[in-house]
Image (cartoon, rainbow, N blue to C red; front, side):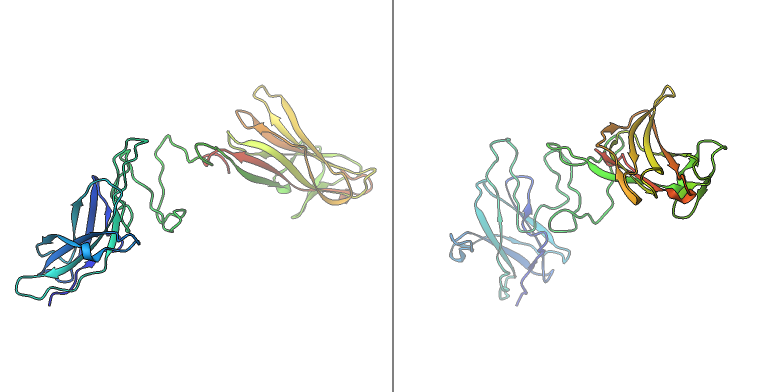
Length: 311
Protein backbone atom coordinates (compact mmCIF):
# COMPACT_ATOMS: atom_id res chain seq x y z
CA UNK A 1 0.00 0.00 0.00
CA UNK A 2 1.30 3.46 -0.81
CA UNK A 3 2.37 5.57 2.13
CA UNK A 4 0.76 8.97 2.81
CA UNK A 5 2.58 12.05 1.63
CA UNK A 6 3.51 14.62 4.22
CA UNK A 7 3.09 18.38 4.23
CA UNK A 8 6.07 20.65 4.74
CA UNK A 9 4.43 22.19 7.79
CA UNK A 10 6.39 25.39 7.93
CA UNK A 11 5.46 26.19 4.33
CA UNK A 12 2.09 24.52 3.82
CA UNK A 13 -0.50 26.69 2.13
CA UNK A 14 1.78 29.66 1.76
CA UNK A 15 0.46 32.77 0.01
CA UNK A 16 0.33 32.94 -3.75
CA UNK A 17 0.97 35.96 -5.92
CA UNK A 18 -2.53 35.75 -7.36
CA UNK A 19 -5.87 34.55 -5.97
CA UNK A 20 -5.52 31.03 -4.67
CA UNK A 21 -3.49 28.84 -2.36
CA UNK A 22 -0.12 27.25 -2.89
CA UNK A 23 0.25 23.81 -1.30
CA UNK A 24 3.84 22.87 -0.49
CA UNK A 25 4.49 19.25 0.38
CA UNK A 26 7.02 16.40 0.42
CA UNK A 27 6.08 12.83 -0.62
CA UNK A 28 6.75 9.75 1.46
CA UNK A 29 7.58 7.72 -1.68
CA UNK A 30 8.86 9.31 -4.93
CA UNK A 31 7.47 6.46 -7.06
CA UNK A 32 3.76 7.04 -6.28
CA UNK A 33 1.35 9.65 -7.54
CA UNK A 34 -0.10 12.25 -5.16
CA UNK A 35 -3.84 12.91 -4.91
CA UNK A 36 -5.02 16.20 -3.38
CA UNK A 37 -8.51 16.83 -1.98
CA UNK A 38 -10.17 20.09 -1.05
CA UNK A 39 -13.19 20.91 1.10
CA UNK A 40 -14.77 23.86 2.89
CA UNK A 41 -15.39 24.74 6.51
CA UNK A 42 -18.27 22.85 8.13
CA UNK A 43 -19.34 25.99 10.00
CA UNK A 44 -17.56 25.03 13.20
CA UNK A 45 -13.98 25.66 12.07
CA UNK A 46 -13.39 22.06 10.95
CA UNK A 47 -13.27 20.49 7.47
CA UNK A 48 -16.52 19.29 5.89
CA UNK A 49 -15.29 15.79 5.04
CA UNK A 50 -18.53 14.85 3.27
CA UNK A 51 -18.06 17.68 0.79
CA UNK A 52 -14.43 16.83 -0.01
CA UNK A 53 -13.53 16.60 -3.71
CA UNK A 54 -10.35 15.47 -5.42
CA UNK A 55 -8.92 18.37 -7.38
CA UNK A 56 -5.82 16.81 -8.90
CA UNK A 57 -3.67 13.68 -9.10
CA UNK A 58 -0.03 14.65 -9.54
CA UNK A 59 2.65 12.45 -11.06
CA UNK A 60 5.39 11.05 -8.79
CA UNK A 61 7.16 13.80 -6.88
CA UNK A 62 10.86 13.81 -5.83
CA UNK A 63 11.60 13.52 -2.12
CA UNK A 64 12.78 17.13 -2.20
CA UNK A 65 9.12 18.11 -2.48
CA UNK A 66 6.98 20.19 -4.80
CA UNK A 67 4.09 22.65 -4.86
CA UNK A 68 0.60 22.79 -6.30
CA UNK A 69 -1.24 26.05 -6.86
CA UNK A 70 -5.01 25.89 -6.43
CA UNK A 71 -6.57 28.88 -8.20
CA UNK A 72 -9.55 30.15 -6.26
CA UNK A 73 -11.89 33.14 -6.19
CA UNK A 74 -10.90 35.93 -3.85
CA UNK A 75 -13.78 35.41 -1.46
CA UNK A 76 -12.32 35.10 2.03
CA UNK A 77 -13.60 31.51 2.35
CA UNK A 78 -11.59 29.10 4.47
CA UNK A 79 -10.69 25.85 2.72
CA UNK A 80 -9.04 22.61 3.85
CA UNK A 81 -6.67 20.31 2.01
CA UNK A 82 -5.38 16.77 2.43
CA UNK A 83 -3.37 14.42 0.24
CA UNK A 84 -2.38 10.79 -0.16
CA UNK A 85 -0.29 8.49 -2.33
CA UNK A 86 -2.01 6.50 -5.05
CA UNK A 87 -1.14 4.24 -8.00
CA UNK A 88 -3.16 2.13 -10.40
CA UNK A 89 -3.32 -1.46 -9.19
CA UNK A 90 -2.33 -0.50 -5.67
CA UNK A 91 -4.37 0.24 -2.58
CA UNK A 92 -4.53 3.98 -1.99
CA UNK A 93 -2.46 5.29 0.88
CA UNK A 94 -3.93 6.87 4.01
CA UNK A 95 -4.98 10.50 3.84
CA UNK A 96 -2.79 13.06 5.53
CA UNK A 97 -4.25 15.37 8.17
CA UNK A 98 -6.32 18.30 6.97
CA UNK A 99 -4.62 21.67 6.82
CA UNK A 100 -6.38 24.98 6.21
CA UNK A 101 -5.82 28.18 4.29
CA UNK A 102 -7.85 31.18 3.23
CA UNK A 103 -7.80 33.64 0.36
CA UNK A 104 -8.81 36.93 2.00
CA UNK A 105 -11.35 39.29 0.48
CA UNK A 106 -9.83 42.24 -1.44
CA UNK A 107 -8.81 45.33 0.52
CA UNK A 108 -11.02 47.89 -1.19
CA UNK A 109 -9.50 50.72 0.86
CA UNK A 110 -6.13 50.56 -0.84
CA UNK A 111 -7.04 48.66 -3.98
CA UNK A 112 -4.16 46.22 -3.42
CA UNK A 113 -4.01 42.72 -4.80
CA UNK A 114 -5.10 40.22 -2.15
CA UNK A 115 -2.59 37.74 -0.78
CA UNK A 116 -3.51 34.26 0.44
CA UNK A 117 -2.04 33.34 3.81
CA UNK A 118 -2.02 29.77 5.07
CA UNK A 119 -0.95 28.21 8.39
CA UNK A 120 2.69 28.36 7.38
CA UNK A 121 2.64 32.16 7.00
CA UNK A 122 4.20 34.23 4.23
CA UNK A 123 7.34 32.71 2.68
CA UNK A 124 10.32 35.02 3.02
CA UNK A 125 10.98 34.64 -0.71
CA UNK A 126 7.80 36.60 -1.51
CA UNK A 127 8.16 40.40 -1.74
CA UNK A 128 5.66 42.90 -0.38
CA UNK A 129 3.66 45.26 -2.57
CA UNK A 130 6.63 47.62 -2.86
CA UNK A 131 8.90 44.83 -4.12
CA UNK A 132 10.90 44.69 -0.89
CA UNK A 133 11.30 41.98 1.73
CA UNK A 134 10.89 41.66 5.51
CA UNK A 135 13.77 41.22 7.96
CA UNK A 136 14.19 37.80 9.54
CA UNK A 137 12.83 37.59 13.09
CA UNK A 138 13.92 34.71 15.30
CA UNK A 139 11.14 34.95 17.87
CA UNK A 140 7.37 34.62 17.49
CA UNK A 141 6.80 38.24 18.53
CA UNK A 142 8.92 39.49 15.64
CA UNK A 143 11.28 41.48 17.88
CA UNK A 144 14.54 39.52 17.72
CA UNK A 145 16.71 39.10 14.65
CA UNK A 146 18.86 36.05 14.03
CA UNK A 147 21.12 37.63 11.44
CA UNK A 148 23.09 40.81 10.73
CA UNK A 149 21.21 44.00 9.84
CA UNK A 150 22.62 46.33 7.19
CA UNK A 151 21.39 49.82 6.31
CA UNK A 152 22.16 51.36 2.94
CA UNK A 153 24.33 54.45 2.81
CA UNK A 154 22.36 57.64 3.31
CA UNK A 155 19.74 56.01 5.53
CA UNK A 156 19.60 56.20 9.34
CA UNK A 157 18.15 53.92 11.99
CA UNK A 158 15.74 56.21 13.82
CA UNK A 159 14.32 56.08 17.35
CA UNK A 160 10.55 55.68 17.77
CA UNK A 161 8.05 55.49 14.91
CA UNK A 162 7.19 57.58 11.85
CA UNK A 163 4.04 58.82 13.57
CA UNK A 164 5.72 59.45 16.91
CA UNK A 165 9.46 60.15 16.68
CA UNK A 166 11.21 59.59 19.99
CA UNK A 167 14.71 59.76 21.45
CA UNK A 168 17.09 57.76 23.59
CA UNK A 169 18.60 59.20 26.76
CA UNK A 170 22.24 58.38 27.38
CA UNK A 171 24.74 59.38 30.07
CA UNK A 172 28.36 60.46 29.60
CA UNK A 173 30.57 60.39 32.70
CA UNK A 174 33.97 62.13 32.85
CA UNK A 175 36.20 61.05 35.78
CA UNK A 176 38.62 63.28 37.68
CA UNK A 177 41.63 61.79 35.89
CA UNK A 178 40.54 63.51 32.64
CA UNK A 179 41.15 67.00 34.05
CA UNK A 180 44.24 69.20 33.76
CA UNK A 181 45.11 72.43 35.65
CA UNK A 182 44.51 75.70 33.81
CA UNK A 183 48.16 76.74 34.18
CA UNK A 184 51.55 75.56 35.45
CA UNK A 185 51.09 77.86 38.43
CA UNK A 186 48.34 75.61 39.76
CA UNK A 187 49.19 73.18 42.57
CA UNK A 188 47.03 70.08 42.46
CA UNK A 189 47.07 66.43 43.49
CA UNK A 190 45.48 63.36 41.89
CA UNK A 191 44.67 60.02 43.55
CA UNK A 192 42.92 56.99 42.07
CA UNK A 193 39.66 58.21 43.62
CA UNK A 194 39.64 62.01 43.33
CA UNK A 195 41.61 65.17 42.64
CA UNK A 196 42.20 67.99 45.15
CA UNK A 197 44.24 71.14 45.71
CA UNK A 198 47.86 70.64 46.77
CA UNK A 199 48.03 73.90 48.67
CA UNK A 200 45.64 74.89 51.46
CA UNK A 201 43.60 78.07 51.18
CA UNK A 202 44.39 78.37 47.46
CA UNK A 203 41.87 77.86 44.66
CA UNK A 204 42.81 75.29 42.06
CA UNK A 205 41.10 75.47 38.63
CA UNK A 206 40.89 72.31 36.50
CA UNK A 207 39.49 71.84 33.02
CA UNK A 208 38.50 68.85 30.89
CA UNK A 209 36.90 68.03 27.57
CA UNK A 210 33.30 66.94 27.02
CA UNK A 211 33.27 64.99 23.76
CA UNK A 212 29.74 64.99 22.32
CA UNK A 213 28.50 64.18 18.80
CA UNK A 214 26.58 66.71 16.76
CA UNK A 215 22.82 66.37 16.90
CA UNK A 216 22.40 65.31 20.52
CA UNK A 217 20.76 67.52 23.15
CA UNK A 218 22.23 68.01 26.64
CA UNK A 219 19.41 67.85 29.18
CA UNK A 220 21.08 67.48 32.62
CA UNK A 221 24.42 67.66 34.43
CA UNK A 222 25.61 66.24 37.76
CA UNK A 223 28.90 66.30 39.68
CA UNK A 224 30.27 64.22 42.56
CA UNK A 225 32.27 66.47 44.93
CA UNK A 226 33.43 66.74 48.55
CA UNK A 227 33.41 69.72 50.90
CA UNK A 228 34.55 69.60 54.54
CA UNK A 229 33.18 72.90 55.86
CA UNK A 230 30.12 74.59 54.41
CA UNK A 231 31.12 78.06 55.55
CA UNK A 232 34.65 78.25 54.13
CA UNK A 233 35.50 75.47 51.70
CA UNK A 234 34.08 75.30 48.18
CA UNK A 235 33.72 72.83 45.34
CA UNK A 236 32.07 73.79 42.06
CA UNK A 237 31.81 72.47 38.50
CA UNK A 238 30.65 74.34 35.38
CA UNK A 239 29.54 72.99 31.99
CA UNK A 240 30.96 75.35 29.35
CA UNK A 241 30.07 75.82 25.69
CA UNK A 242 32.98 76.97 23.49
CA UNK A 243 31.74 79.13 20.63
CA UNK A 244 33.22 79.33 17.13
CA UNK A 245 34.54 82.85 17.75
CA UNK A 246 36.65 81.74 20.73
CA UNK A 247 34.27 82.99 23.40
CA UNK A 248 32.68 80.66 25.91
CA UNK A 249 29.42 80.47 27.84
CA UNK A 250 28.73 78.68 31.12
CA UNK A 251 25.58 76.61 30.50
CA UNK A 252 25.28 75.38 34.06
CA UNK A 253 27.18 75.73 37.34
CA UNK A 254 26.97 72.99 39.96
CA UNK A 255 27.89 74.01 43.50
CA UNK A 256 28.42 71.68 46.45
CA UNK A 257 25.54 72.57 48.75
CA UNK A 258 26.40 70.62 51.90
CA UNK A 259 29.26 68.78 53.52
CA UNK A 260 30.95 65.45 52.83
CA UNK A 261 30.55 63.63 49.52
CA UNK A 262 27.49 64.82 47.58
CA UNK A 263 26.17 64.40 44.06
CA UNK A 264 24.72 67.75 43.05
CA UNK A 265 22.70 68.45 39.92
CA UNK A 266 22.30 71.49 37.71
CA UNK A 267 19.04 73.10 36.74
CA UNK A 268 17.25 71.68 33.68
CA UNK A 269 19.26 72.01 30.47
CA UNK A 270 18.26 71.95 26.82
CA UNK A 271 21.34 72.49 24.69
CA UNK A 272 21.51 71.14 21.14
CA UNK A 273 25.08 70.25 20.19
CA UNK A 274 26.05 71.81 16.87
CA UNK A 275 29.31 73.28 15.59
CA UNK A 276 30.47 74.34 19.04
CA UNK A 277 32.63 72.43 21.55
CA UNK A 278 32.14 71.68 25.25
CA UNK A 279 34.29 71.44 28.36
CA UNK A 280 34.02 71.39 32.13
CA UNK A 281 35.65 73.71 34.65
CA UNK A 282 36.20 72.65 38.26
CA UNK A 283 37.18 74.98 41.11
CA UNK A 284 38.27 73.63 44.49
CA UNK A 285 39.20 75.47 47.68
CA UNK A 286 40.18 73.77 50.95
CA UNK A 287 40.82 76.55 53.45
CA UNK A 288 42.17 74.67 56.46
CA UNK A 289 43.48 71.54 54.70
CA UNK A 290 44.14 70.41 51.15
CA UNK A 291 41.75 67.46 51.59
CA UNK A 292 38.80 69.71 52.48
CA UNK A 293 37.75 70.10 48.82
CA UNK A 294 37.76 67.23 46.30
CA UNK A 295 36.31 66.31 42.91
CA UNK A 296 35.43 62.80 41.67
CA UNK A 297 33.39 63.03 38.41
CA UNK A 298 30.91 64.95 36.29
CA UNK A 299 28.26 63.40 34.07
CA UNK A 300 25.85 64.65 31.42
CA UNK A 301 22.51 63.26 30.28
CA UNK A 302 21.75 63.79 26.61
CA UNK A 303 19.12 62.63 24.15
CA UNK A 304 19.73 61.28 20.65
CA UNK A 305 17.04 61.13 17.94
CA UNK A 306 18.75 58.38 15.91
CA UNK A 307 21.34 55.67 16.38
CA UNK A 308 24.00 57.43 14.29
CA UNK A 309 24.36 59.96 17.11
CA UNK A 310 25.70 59.19 20.52
CA UNK A 311 28.74 57.62 22.16
